[in-house]
Image (cartoon, rainbow, N blue to C red; front, side, top):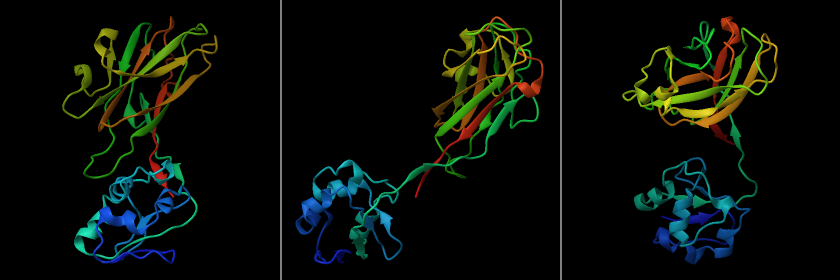
Length: 256
């Protein structure tokens, strides 16, 4: 096997092992933060995992060389199996962008998930039906999510009061606080002690018909999720279903 650099002048012998790489490629070149490193196994260029570089060089690369571990050790695999591998030097950097996906709507009717928030009383809460974010065997799912809330009141509220928002993750067997998976009322905050607090939507207007809207973000690893609202204001939420909604949007990362 022969390992080569696309820049002329660096060639290493077929008998080289991964731990010998530093003998043939200058240390300064490996540490240069402007370089991009790739592995080839007779196919398209792919990023080397940073931990393989660390093992090969006996050093810790600078942050620009902390590359995404997207190939599962392809370079080391090439060495062990005698395939051709190459490292290419090039300028520039990859962009890690956020991709927007389909929004899931939690509301009394017409949404993705049933969440009956209409006329939610003072000092009372509501649990949504459970959302399945996707089976890991069927699809890779994102871990980053954003949420938005929207609601009004039946009577004029007080500026500074708030509605609290929580999520209850589940693995599909254990439902947090044994709340179940269906849209249901919550009569006491003692029953949601293990729910994950997401934030609160703070009342900004004293007019009952004005929509109060908030937002936030969170990380979710488990497959299932239920939303929870707790009305900590002194006024009952509105009675029009279309005005009361919690929205969830996944944000997977995309490397370009």
